[in-house]
Length: 293
Image 1 (tube, rainbow, N blue to C red):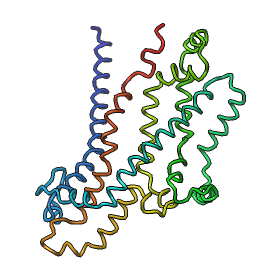
Image 2: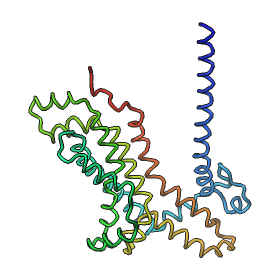
Image 3: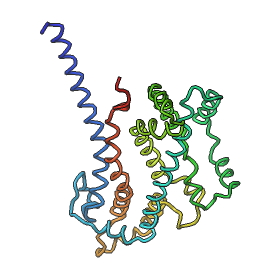
Image 4: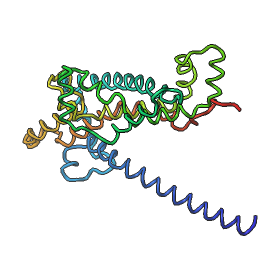
């Protein structure tokens, strides 16, 4: 090995070490607050009051989770939010695929104009009042559609998927056309299977956005049966603050912090369960098996 190669390898190793330390730091910054939330939710009243809780529970206590489970309205909203998120994600991906595939075709008439109009929406937002008036004029207020339909087609996600579809080797489509495939069959049999990693990633974006959304529910929904778990979580926290005097009673082994953090952990569970199943697509090559040569 030459002196030049030795110096190059040394610089590469130092850079790799720096990257490892940097990303370990990012992971710790992300995980430590989550561990603290989990620990507080599982700790005793006295440990929380004295500030002893760090990243590990002190005085293990599951009463906060029992209280969350016993809250019927919270649990109903929890399962309703799961169904809403699943339905919204399916609708969003259906619309995104139907829009992205034709826009990926250079032969589409008016393609540049359509893309220009779509991109404009990424930079100009009319604001909440026009949004509200639009929902009201469509008679969607206080219905599940008021929070399921808006945001079901993200211009940003559309551009990502369209770019992916555009990158698929045209020879695959030409071979399909020669075998008698229509555009619809080409989309279903070629484009969508190759785009699984992108579709999985965008599905996660849509799901997380809907799951965490709370402002639109506050604006458009008054029916308590249609309120999401995030809004219930906010209401639950407010009600706990009001009843804080109860902690004076020594028989109660919970503090508002217990229940707040237990509710937060509980509301994170669906995303934490879904992520490992989708994460495997992130690490796969986007074109694995697409073009053999």
